[in-house]
Length: 551
Image 1 (cartoon, one colour):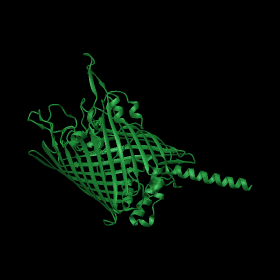
Image 2 (cartoon, rainbow, N blue to C red; image 1 turned 90 degrees about the vertical axis):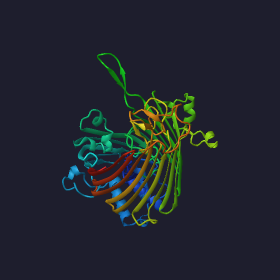
Image 3 (cartoon, rainbow, N blue to C red; image 1 turned 45 degrees about the vertical axis):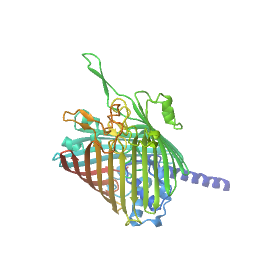
Image 4 (cartoon, one colour; image 1 turned 180 degrees about the vertical axis):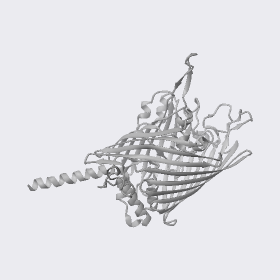
């Protein structure tokens, strides 16, 4: 009996351990969530180690392990309460009933509230509704728009190794179409823009297999890639979401990340006959990225290789995560667009971090060594940033300063339209900057309470546009259009910010207030001053958003 009782204890301990992993969940926390900013500032403060958010999203299991290793004695009152909030939101599996089981008493509370949740020792599943309404007013068109989105999501885990998610929304517009285009989802919606009806939609989902060190994911969700605090240089918030297969490996201080994605190009039309005038075709376009990095409490260093290719089925070489792709693409007759990227972060003092990123696009080192830096064949994008928080600044305060530069012709490439450009469906993959541009960006954040965050920002962007005459004919190319590649007729030397200068200054103010857990009210205001030749224009835009999201 003693042996049986002892083995039973071991079995119960094992079940409890597996259940704790299960309840942490294999699925990811969306890349846009502010929880990542919270963990980043704790790392810069010196509270947590070996954390970086160069590539997002991360799994709930990964984030739960971070929360369990936080020394709460090093947190102030607001940070402790915020940590409790995210623990409840993402990691808690309590005996609280779902809303559907105890409606309406459970509708408004600060528990881990979900519409429906099921879990046992092997399987968990959660179903939640999604609702959002946004009012937009722009002084530029002197009209307002109201956007309403309705949808939901289902996600869960099987065992402690498999996660899944399905999310979808449908939205419609009441009001002015021009004002509605200030919303990124609407601006990128095929339904809204190509069919010219007042509806828009969005969907994402994936299946993910993971353990403590490895993960493999197939699906569609927002992926961020880069060190930037405000703008990600490689993959940012700017482009539409895309489908991908993703592989991640981490062992102690070494990590390896791989992603192969299916991008979108504008469709082509082939004429047939008088009855069927044209057939619409979707041309292929892909991107592959891999990154190896070393991460510790004081610094993170990484190197990435990037390939964009098109007009054929996906290449096995670029599905191979353990290959030098530049050499591989040469063996494939050198018809693709390759990049090399370096990035790093350095915690100089507690409360201070410096980061940099650089993407090399066809650098000719022989010409550089001869002093020919301004040769038109040198494509380079780079970024440097400084993040300050307490104890350098007052408690719960963050200050970010960021500089981004794209040299002329960077991210463009010979080909048809956007065939090999660094874009997805016409939108830049990383920072929303054209070649031959600079951007100075700053932001000051202050968290008043665990549920209230306020920020103020200012940015200055300068862009050297190609020179056109009054009839729209190109007079001179200065490398300022990602869709206009370098030709033999262009000047040999190109200089940053030559051409017709376009200047955009913007001040932003935002306030995010989570009334109850999952009930969020957000206010955004921006003032934009635009100057181009004789055009001087000022615009005030106001966004008031309320959304219900228990995820």
